[in-house]
Length: 266
Image (tube, rainbow, N blue to C red; front, side, top):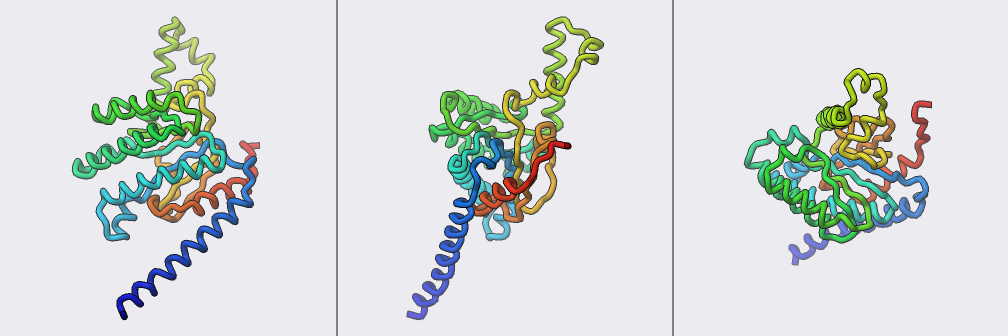
């Protein structure tokens, strides 16, 4: 009997807390002006390993919990009329992690990408250096793009093997190769080069730049994420680790964004 009472005593506050969060999230959502919602959101999904350590779990469990949160996030974005989401799932630096962490992590990422493509609501586009990734991961990314190619929902950029400096380097290399194939000399290119010329060779060419970039885990830096595209982006840094990111945290980010006056340098 004492055990039952103890269990009930623990359960009631948790249920009450969940109810309060739901009511608060609904209140924030009801007051959200959908006309002020960012059309493109970039998300730096940070803190899986620290969340696992704090909860007494393994690193792999942390990555799995982070993967589950991706599905929730896309649902929230659909509810609030977001059109493009860029998810930084794996950086080029992450590829240097120990094999016993990297191999399971790649498997988890492959599962996330497959799920996004199979859902039927999202489109998928890979951003990053494909040739740095294992053959199986490359195949999954290509197949996901093909499978989800005709979907009409949110465009989901999956940044896997991604680094911002490398993206700019690849864009310049692609631009030089393209102009050379048309007989344009370096001197001619240097005289006519514009910002738009480089933008047209980025991984996200043809897409709007991110209006809002969210980073979880309390870190306040970009770490190389979308360096070119984020010149005029707004930033929202959230203290919570990525697996613990809640709908109310997402809505707070949108509310914070809507309250800002974007000047674009003027």
